[in-house]
Length: 477
View 1 (cartoon, rainbow, N blue to C red):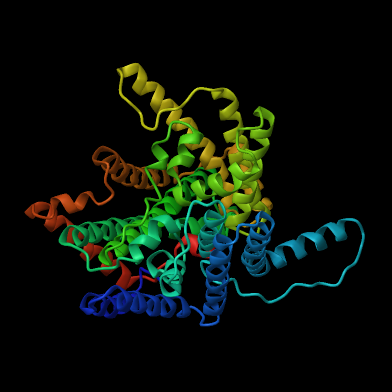
View 2: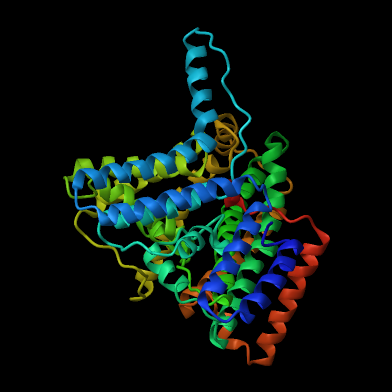
């Protein structure tokens, strides 16, 4: 059940009215929990059993870890939680990947082994909810969180449908207290929620899906295209994945606000970043902060000297790449980002980087624009490995970029790419200037803004009605 489908709007048309009519927190929580399991089970009801298993395991272990004063017992309980969660994730997402890698190495050594590949269906959103429920137990182990006494509240924390399948990856200390006080939203929350959803659908349906259809066409048969078209497709993919994923996050946050819940921001105009460290502060914030807090810092962070810091950055980003998908191309994607971050850390030394660009004259603006351009070029290279089906296809793109061959359609492809860039950057600049993702909410009383908003909404629905919706890119993870 995709957000950009009419089935979902029918689902929402039932969930919201009943939720508003229910009078107390417990009934609202039970209703949302039932709705969330129905939402998740709509893909495959068998997925719900895995979701329930992770929920029950971490609910029980979280309480036992909190109650225990014995360090050895607490650590063993934590390892049980990690083993269950990572075991489920590892089997369903990585079993065939590792078996295939072993078979490939064996074949290269002249050894013959029987294939052990299994027909495994990857549960939707398993990487997201696994990290979310793991953070709950880890925070309790670190004495940073007290466990909830309500299994219903915890189950809803794990399965909350607006962010279940593609984040943001929430922390219990933010989401659980809101679930414990569920109530109807105020007018301001409804207005900002609808504004966030409008922003998200515009990004996903009109920008992400439109760019995605062009990208799919080129990447499905790149040999048919010349160098300019291949480069345009890669740039369009960088736009597609950002519009698609930030669009999902905006929709998720908007839906949550309609239920009286505030989710964390997941994107803060990443393509306006002036360096790679800033990019990761702005891109998929819930994942990057999770990797920092639960992996990078656990490995030692920057506390054990420069050499160990660079190793920790590389390990974190390599595992972050593998989290995205069971393919060595994702590992390379993560590895490149790890190299970028390590080099930037080496360059910075002990200096701090500002959170935002501050205008201090024309020279500062030129420096910022050059730095932003270089950062995006580095990120663009990594997107090639993220999108390519294998190293052979990535190598073909790189070869065509090095041995450039022009095309009569260069102007057309350039115009299409620039048009998409202008639209997505315009949205980001507005968000940057206003500091709000729901900036439309502040203009709903203005007739012109209301008219434009209605026109955009009609355009989105007409587009959805006349075309097959593309799944959200991050649903595959």
